[in-house]
Image 1 (spheres, one colour):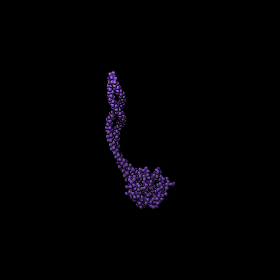
Image 2: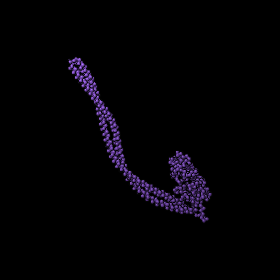
Image 3: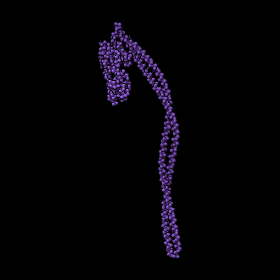
Image 4: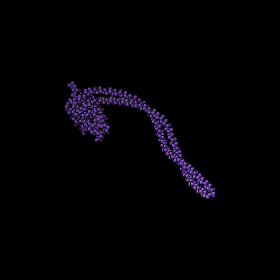
Length: 578
């Protein structure tokens, strides 16, 4: 509230047109400031991305050069292998022809051995028959020998009878003697023939034995030849198969050499394209550096204008009508979106107090406290941490806290997947853990405070730490088992429960209640005004009534009374983070 006095006299009251212009100018400049900051941030990100892309492309170009070098060596190797393959093909052809000739020779040898074996068997049979014939001759000689013996005996008897006959038997005696001599000669000749036949039989038996040995040797040779022929045929078949495979190998080598040659050409073309892209990225990087520089100049200029605007707002605020309620909000998103979203709600609050509202989004989180302390605005809608920061510099009185989903606060959560075997907070030591972002209160700062207050060093407690960028991604990573545990908060948990079966997850620990936004006024403000303003907010409900629609638009159920002590948990978290 302003006393609207100047030099002891009431300050002149500005009309609605001027005040509206100041409000609109403030809004447009703040929008420009917001856009400028985001443009600067985007340009810096693009410049960084272009620089990173250039570095990546340089490494890529180096890799392409190495690939070309490797492909060239490979191509040379393929050419050498092709020459070796052609020479090997000639050797393979000669070897195949030699094996086939060997097989043919072995087959001829097998036929020859078969013929010799048959001839040997025939000779053995004929010789055996001859041996049997000599045995028959021996029998005949034995008969002749017996006849000769009987003849000699008869001649002897005839000689005896002739001697008895005297002179008359002398002639017969001579005949008998000659017959005896003939029988003797016949017996001797038969004995000689028998001996010769026996000698010939012995020799024939030796011949038969030799023929049998020859036949056995020929049979063994034939079997060995058949085995050798089978192996030679098998070797020949192997050579033929090898020949086919070798031909395929040569074909593949030729195709591979052609492919490598084409790949070298394509890679060289790619290298030229990479150089062109590098040049373009370099030009883009320089342009983006200029863009970043201009964006910074633009932001700096807007900031200077914002400082002048602050002076103008301070001057104008002292000359505004007493029936206006000026409200400031921290720039947690696009200023125009803040105005569109919260404007109807705050206009309804002002209407209930019989006032007209005007909205101002502060240039940054720190400025709202100063705007409140200097009287530019009557009420500040602070994000929790912005309230704590402002309250350290300016005496403030929190009036109300919005309730979202029925709660004026939330809790930071440390969660784990039940299947990971982690059932207690201390079991996360050395594990893989996911935070949201180093700048996140609920997804980083408060869970770290929780660990510290449980006696654990948050900087050295986990084995590996990941920052996933959002609460949804943290919950999803824990749900899928990609991390052992994660940090989130109750609102995100409730939202995830609408689409996921969270029964497989377990909440290992909760922070104490962390209050939501603070609606505050200067501590020096008129107590009656503060009480009326607080009562108005506390009377706003989302169910029925004129306030229902505007409350639902901002997803606020109601407002509850605020107490500065509720924000001590943030103060402890800040102290730890220092």
